[in-house]
Image 1 (tube, rainbow, N blue to C red):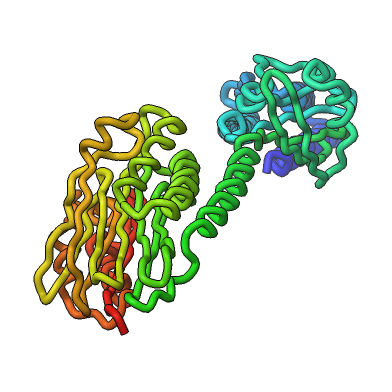
Image 2: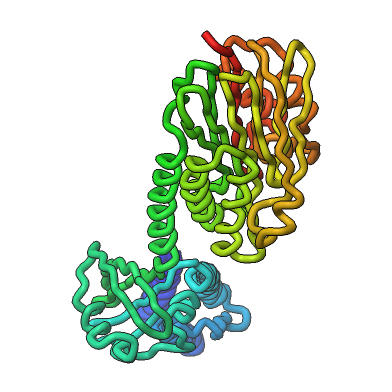
Length: 464
């Protein structure tokens, strides 16, 4: 647009000069009085001077405009000559262009600052460097990973690992690598590289992420999975085929592994031992103590006919093996088909529910937990009781994770709800376990259990 104005003005001025010259020679040919041709001649020289002034000023303004663009100096202003509209139009065009460039530049700078802010705050370390190792970008996450406030030259990273700079410099676009560092702390760095060119120079951008924690979590997850499988294998895989009762049990850990335990111990054709326990706490430590409890119980139960004597021996061994801030609650009972009885002792465990002919009672013989006392106090506190059994009786053993399961309002499932389930008619122990599990899920809204949950259901069938 400015060029068209310049061209039009120049054509008009040249045309005016040509017309004035033609008029001058016409007047001379007509031998007009001297003052008239002289006035025309003066006007001719005035027009020539105006054209030269216009072109020179235009050239100066154009040079200033080009210099402003070249050196990115947009502080200059362009003004027209006084009373000369042609200069005003040209100055307006130049000013309009520089103003648009200023706006575009301001917008670009704003975007650049925005991207810089994102790069600095992104959770992955980023380092950009030239082929000679000069570092152009070193964001906050990278500073935190390497413990440096600034990085000017990539070779400064060799202090963390010999040859680290060369390893990064030699990475091609799209490649990734796992780099182990011993300082400032043990780290496993996942590094990915990309490359680009800017103003004819090659740059490499690497993303650096410390995945030490992820690797540790993965390792821990694998170890927990192994522990989970070990614990599952320690629990009974099938229900015992004992002729005097139908039995089913299930354990649901709150985490990958837990401290709940149940077991069946065959003591001959007429007797069957049933145990259920709960190690204080959750997770891997509780699972380890649970494994210890199982081994100690099985070794002692085979030689003792009395549940109290078994728990007393187990308590002594557990007291010598576990820390003082840990204890184990346990119920151990012996079903006797010959006498139709259940003889049991309870070491601080939740009292099982005994259902007989539509009524129920809690088997709440006193006793403190295993591992709380070395011997005398424990032996005095634990009492052994015997209850008569009839065909069709039910025995429901459980851990506190069942009765203390909570809903969204922090209400507990409670013993009352469990006793109500136990009193109902069930086709089999498996059916009772399913009914209990379904009601707990409905009560809690299928939420994550807060504690390990274990249930053992026994339907006494008596002698064939």
